[in-house]
Image 1 (tube, rainbow, N blue to C red):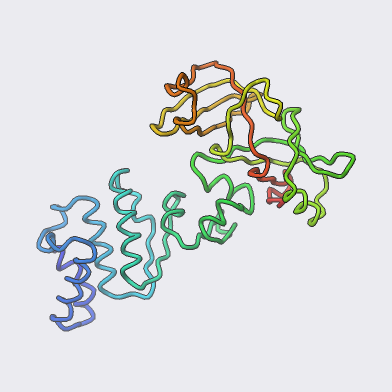
Image 2 (cartoon, one colour; image 1 turned 180 degrees about the vertical axis):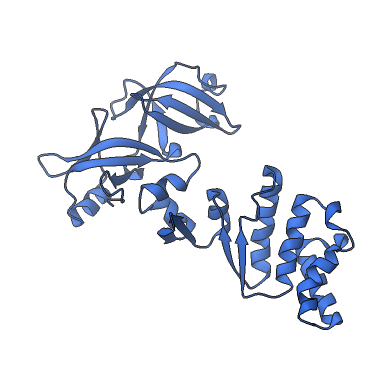
Length: 284
């Protein structure tokens, strides 16, 4: 069947008048930008155009809910980005709820008003993209949302003689912020083994003689990403990813770091996430 016939098929089965079918098909084609392809057969269409036809076939039925199960998974990267933008625009043009299933966290973050993250059939967290990104409920959510993935360190949550909490990683102590101190006290959290999570973009390089607490590491891989640089470093046999903005680096480092080069890094403890090693739940 032609594109027009494909989009009209469900309406024909419902015995909708031809004039009404024609109006709905052309309206949907206009929204999706496929009016010029209405008389073409599927074999004459690109992957992205076929996907628009499939969406159009659903739109003409004016559903209250659109179910989309990984609709972009069979498209190449460029087309996937274009179709993602198309779906965002479509959401603003038709008054319909979208339930969108995806394993791609970028799609979830950019397309969703609310995200439901599931593991093994159980809901892990529900929230807006920003809530899920800033306050992951557990280790699974923290590792799933964010690209590159959050770094995780085996650490210990301790208290000093004044009762203030601090985190010890690789024999280096990081004092927590006043806000974190209060949150841990309010919940009555005891000193314990934890997993500390810190996003790659929240890590910064520093001098080896820096007075602030820091960790020493050795560069394994330097990935040049244009405006940013992804450093994979070995910190006491732990692989850590650091995202650096190229423009913020000294001129001599903007072309990259050498394999085996020694560096030091630190992070703002206020941006760190503390997870119980036992329950894997966020302690704050």
